[in-house]
Every structure is written in structure tokens, then in C-alpha cells.
Image (tube, rainbow, N blue to C red; front, top):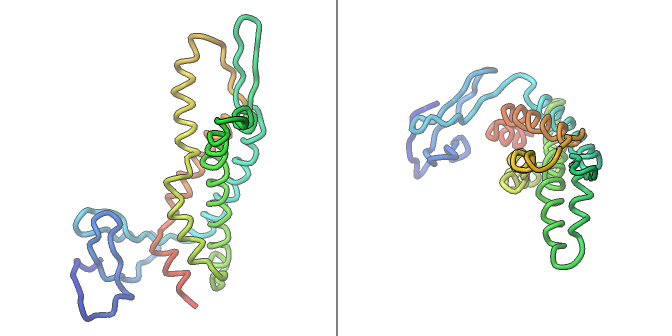
Length: 211
């Protein structure tokens, strides 16, 4: 990556800004597997890899299926003194759907379920034609921008981490049996991490802009 500079009367179409420190660099074509890092903070700016779009699409399909299954399958079962209770994510959210706790149920379903699924679908919509060597669909730029802006609000990973912490505290009070939905969420975290490792924002924006 060319060292940073600050143009005033130059064409800005060939520039890339570091998302962490905002230093401007002149973009260059990279071979598969090469990385371009910020000269100031070392943040990876570009990392094109062969079939990266196809990998992201495949992982998005996988994550979407896991998420849909995790909604309705049993998440965990708590047993104590001969009594047991089994619950799913959807069942827990619906338990708080009445009265003043209804916004809580809406927030749970939106941030843990709806937004991650929407981001998966939006990524598939954005990258499917690009992965097949065709021009991007209409409104692909707007769709991918939504994917980026909604990322902090999609909290499936935060949910499973918080659940693990809660289970440690509950373990001494009752017998906890983990259901298939819990393990689906654990696999989902791995799928999301793999998907994010293949996503290069600059590469995607550059591909969307090509005719």
C-alpha cells in the first residue's frame, strides 16, 4: 500500500481510508492472498482471496439455517427437586410478550434473531451475482451499507456468551441440560467468525462498483 498522503485537487476514486485511524492510501491491485495494511496503525485494509465471495455466501446460508433452527429447538432444560422446564428462544421471548415487558421480547427477537438473519440474507443478495462473475443486483450498495451499519446491533454472539456466564451461576442451584439450539448457537459463532474472516469491505465495494 502506498504511503499516506492528503490530496486536495486529485481524483478521490482510487483512495482508501483506514477504518481505524482515517489515514488515506492509494489503492492498488493485489494478488490473491496478499494483504494491504495501514502504514500508521497496521489495520488490514485489503485482503483479496480466491472464491472469497462464494465462501461468504455459503457461510451465510449455513448461518441462516442454524439461526432458524435455533429459534424453535429446545435451548436448555433446567431440573431441580423433581421438576423440569424446557424452553426455546422463541418460547422465552413470548413469555415476556404481554404487558410492559413486551418491548423486551421485541428487543430479544430483533437483536438475537431477526437482525442476524437479515444480515445473512443481505450478504447473499449482495454477493451472489459477484461470486458468479455477474454485475451486482440493483440496490446492492444500499443493502451492503445496511449490513455494515447493523453489525453492532446483531448480538447473537453476545447472547451465547452471556448465556454461558449465566449457566455457570445457575449450575450450583439446578441441573442444566443443554439442548440442540444451544449447540447450534455455538456453531453459529464459529460460522460468523469464518464469514467475517473472508469479508473484505473494500473488495466488496470495489466489486459492486464495477459494471
